Length: 329
Image (cartoon, rainbow, N blue to C red; front, top):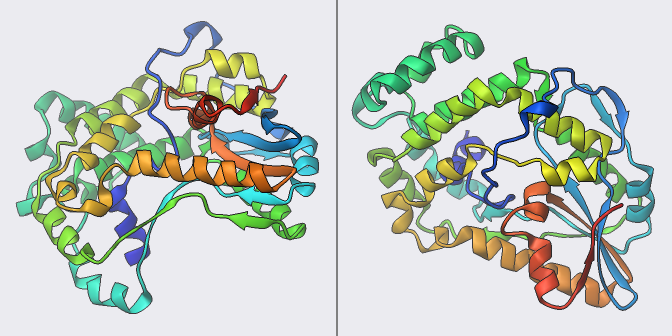
């Protein structure tokens, strides 16, 4: 329970992706059929200085559920690398016994304060839009009516992906991890550790506080009402390794609004460990990349496509430091 709920305090924090671009996806390319079978995904971005190279593989979510990812190029390059940079993330520092003492604080974490329901906290027109989507994707799950909009939005989104033949794309991560273990490649964590010395206080504050998460909930409804076909377009573009299409396609999602709901909450403002997380994670990754480039002839990293192509591109940060960055063909 602890492992599932404590990270939700930073739910949808921009720990592994930069803020999404906001342009609409091109309607003319809408596809309803998802690619299945073995697909290579995109090629590798190359970051270099002299004869030292960092190869970067861009991941995307969601992907077709029945997609079998297999890239001989990635397997070959990764097998010949001396170091693997794990995807950037923020993690909580906490021990087992401390987690046990915090279990009572976690009870009711997802509930609205004071027993409020979604109907109480959402504008009437938003609640009216929610009802048919709930019936379609969550069925008779009445328990969600007493949960905070940000948590309900996550559950609704996950259920919609599953029904639409899409998945978070964990199979790609597992494949990469398998190759790393097979070749006994050095693994370097690239994120940051978040201090949890005040975790009990933060959890208590969170349970009492209101969140400005209506925008998060509303944008999730927007996406499920209008963007599922566009998700398939992007998923297919990634699966085919179509870099031109990937670069032309936007990556709109509800993430930024949900990030803001957490990042601007009162309980977060009282916690120094939760300040400027996005910037700190990017700084840590760039530092790890520079170190890998200094010490290895070949290194390998995974980043989300938004970290590569988005407005806060990690690779642009390296380019600004004088490294040569080459996109795949």
